[in-house]
Length: 152
Image (cartoon, rainbow, N blue to C red):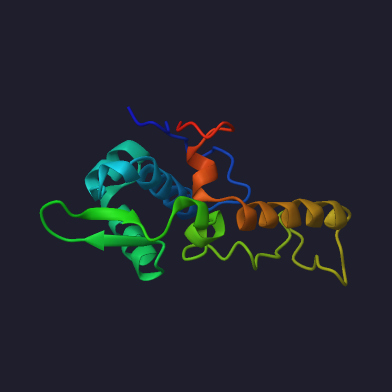
């Protein structure tokens, strides 16, 4: 069984795409195993509950964006491209989801915006800004360490 459990199609996905969630799972797994050396994609796929072929494409993109590094051959695998404290959640998600630019009304009002706000636009905008701030200020290290710095 996966460390993460699975969520059905009808599980809530308010602000993260499935790919963004998969990317966070994979990078968190790599960070938790950083002391063990490079991590194999098949281990990430199994433990993070991410389809292997889909994961390979995501990992390749994260290497291209320098979030990760990879080494081929025996003893190879994936590592963080820099210390977990320096990898922000937005760095992991941005290659797959333009969450920082998302401005569409989540309540289905195609005309909603600053000039024509829906009835909850102002309140929802505060939620969006708080979420963006969270992604900008939360690191991969925050995902894998507890308040006292102990690994989870």
